[in-house]
Image (cartoon, rainbow, N blue to C red):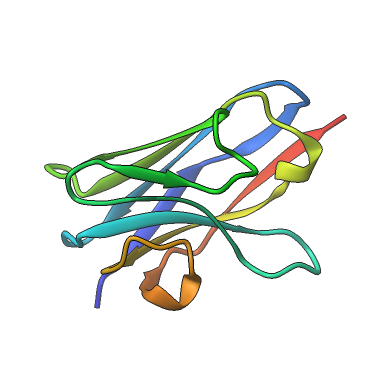
Length: 118
């Protein structure tokens, strides 16, 4: 069973930047960030394959950057020009598909809060 631990996040004002990180216990081909706001379904934010190719959701494309370090089994998300609607718990996930569908991911971190205030 892959274990994932997120860190980072926090609170920032509109237009600010935050970053989140994730360390996993073993390599998986695809790693992704998801988020879930209160009362909403879990939403795919970005996925990245082992070769470093990323896919972003339309809502974050151009503002967020996902990266991974395969030697450190780590995943990163740099978030810029943050908006109030980006407020959510952000989850790191490991899986085997180049997808933003949470059903394709079998291991999840505990989540870290990101809050954007206006």
